[in-house]
Image 1 (cartoon, rainbow, N blue to C red):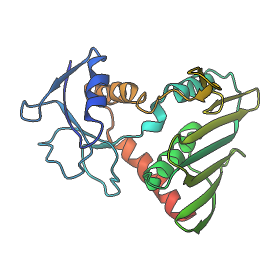
Image 2 (cartoon, rainbow, N blue to C red):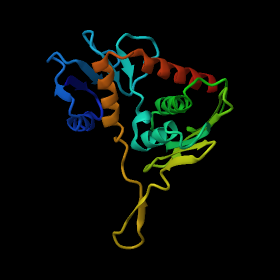
Image 3 (spheres, one colour):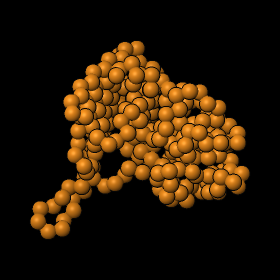
Length: 244
């Protein structure tokens, strides 16, 4: 059992609900000597406890800080990774991701985490990095192209011009033996309430929390290298900086 304390300025209740479904987590307060802490405050005093840092930018190396990499833990991403690892897709050749948000979104974090996802699937750093950005009236469009030694590539498309409402994401993997994808346009449910039916995407925005917490507590329990996430995050941030 891992005693976990939560101190978040946003989404605290979502994290507590997710933690309640993980048998190996006991939720305690920060003054009850927790084994580890989950927070969005990079300046929190940890008292030598491991910290899962959600929603901040830990660029400098800080001992015991584990940057959250939430995009790795969405159910559809886990399914694609399992299919790739099982050899069902063959050798990975192409990753294509769209990430279209509203202007008030945390653009840097979204892009860095998307780059991390591409590196995580390929399992290596890119040899070639290309990027282009256009901006007009606070509307920004970016395209990042990563080329890998194996001959594979990742095409990442970002846009912050969507009006208030749903965002849009898609993730496609193409390998030598098959392809797999997760696409918001396909993951729609029909709702009937008079008039024409509405095709709405179910809210899965917080579905990553449970698997992410399970991964973190396993690192804490087994004494795994806590710096691996920091290395991955910083590599993704470096590519974001170069491509921008």
